[in-house]
Length: 506
Image 1 (cartoon, rainbow, N blue to C red):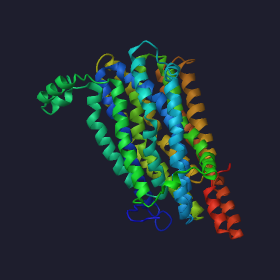
Image 2 (cartoon, rainbow, N blue to C red):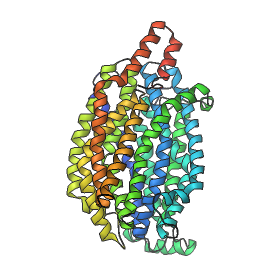
Image 3 (cartoon, rainbow, N blue to C red):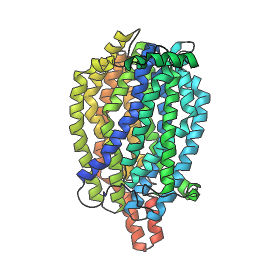
Image 4 (cartoon, one colour):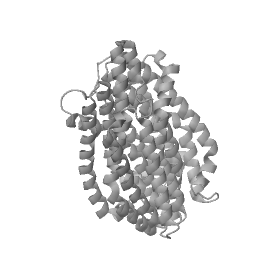
């Protein structure tokens, strides 16, 4: 196990708050850059008018659902590596990492193929009408995304494995380069080489004329955003795999580690399957709410697409802290430091509450201005009005949503992925769907009812999860299995014990 360029943070000894911040901030920044893909797409596609923005809303409702399901299996890699490292079982890390890479890549390829074939049906399911420009744009986008699914997931795997090891800076550096490339090529793939404002910004009209005359390229419209994303993601996928194989990041893979072993697959599925359901529930709620909002018209769908993207940026600190808490809990439970693991969750809750209170004020005050940045052309004024209302209502529940994410991170870090899954289903699917539908349809509030339904659900879900967290039973299974195995005095059994953490219900 090479330590040459190991940037991992010590989470087991010494202070806790600062290591949590050091671990989580790069995750937050990486996620911000990841959302940068979507914001860049929204900005440039917005130059095509309301139809382009609506198409992205429909497309993302489908693509994010599929991505979220597969990405949950990366949680298994994070948890197993974190707990093995905390327990000192470094000999198990490479095997877990290699198995996770192969399993998730195969899964992403399968889901990509299925998604490609079912794209027309899935788009109609979320309210896109065949024959419209929105539907045509959305179908082109999702099919390119599904074809490139393995490249998209390659970086997510790399990020999760390094996170479990305690290194969140290396994935940040790679993502920064990828986003920079995406920002540069996005407008050209979307708008082509004629009447592209980028050339005007930099006074390169002569170059614009030359390129268009040579290629005649008018852009790929919405599909161009997907092509640019796949190209950018491929860059970090290749570099990330090379870093793991070279051992330059602490984890050192050999080609043999990439071969699937039955026991490794079993552990990944046991921990990862519930985590996949949990992660996908948020995307599923977007899909459900998009279908409800579609009843109010295409402008409402465009407004919801923009508003939900802005919300996703605002809660990034919560998602980052949740992943940091996940690693803190995993490594400390691996080291049998249960109370320290709990303190990690409390520290995350305090930090995210302070941060999101500030963001809530900022978003509430500038709600309409924020939406206006991302839309132009026909229907823009209506989209801004509806989107601004969404942000003002939902922003009042940001703190509750953030605390929920952090608590869920604690559950996942302990291996209690079934517990996290249960609360996610109840919160994102049941609460949001029931409240949003009731207020939007029977009470005839339309899109406004959906906004209030989402906000109310955010409050209810954290109350439910918080009460269970305070019971403390989510850590009992880990401690009991460790004590039993330690008594047996078997070093091999100890390694197996840690790797199996989280494979049971608690």
